Figure: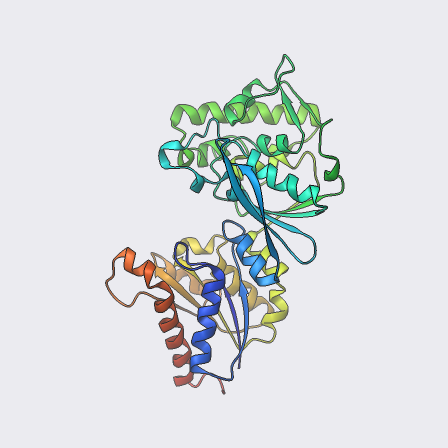
Length: 381
């Protein structure tokens, strides 16, 4: 029997690699001669570097950088065997880097993400896989571009201060200082939202409040981003703000679209393509996927549904999802290729106990899943 395990992390308890390793151990406990293929996966957001480095036998690079408020940190990105770099916006510009009381949507900057990109470019990387998601910023990617040598100037020719609020002062953009090594680089951007930069469904209006912006600050940021978009169009002839997804990660796409070739794609599809999922699923008798929580929102670009839909498209193979918890509407996912959903919590437990026993509970649940298949005589072992 061939089993393909393609699972996301259980956030806060197990990495994607730990999840796939644990399910493999469970499968071998039940079916000792089983053939296992493991693909740690992610949806293009946080965890994408870990998943792709593990799945593709890449390496991690640690880089001095700056957090959204300009404080020095050390951040990581991934290098894959083909020479591509995998960078998560959240690594240096993420909301998790700030305490709740530190969130400052007006002044937070993506400069740190630009520092990671700059480091990769200076080390001859020509393809960058960029995961959007989890950002603390609403600066239209200006900080990122600034780290690569782009200058954003006010009417007096002075460089703007960091943060989206200062984009309302933007008068001109100079590309003269763009990093020489940037020539010939292309971006693959994992993005699962369609929001444009500005307006009622824009970066500030939809995502600003979770980054600390109050109602008045949302209006200020939206106006600043609209002005920024107008300058990009006027000075660089780039209508970046009209691109689907330009509102993601605080408008980060607008920091690369005017200067680089960019391909935007679904995060989970990008990860599945990079890990040759289609070829692996052709050999599988069963696919096991999972993530920390499965509910109706899992249909919106999350790993279990992405894995299931792709598996059914390639080959009509059974797909089982294992989750740390099941939420409202998880039964709707049966319409998206998932054949059965199991949660790992064995009974009433505190959140602390759930987290501390996550691997043990996953192992037990995965073993029961495999025993159920045996009892049902669905496959010949």
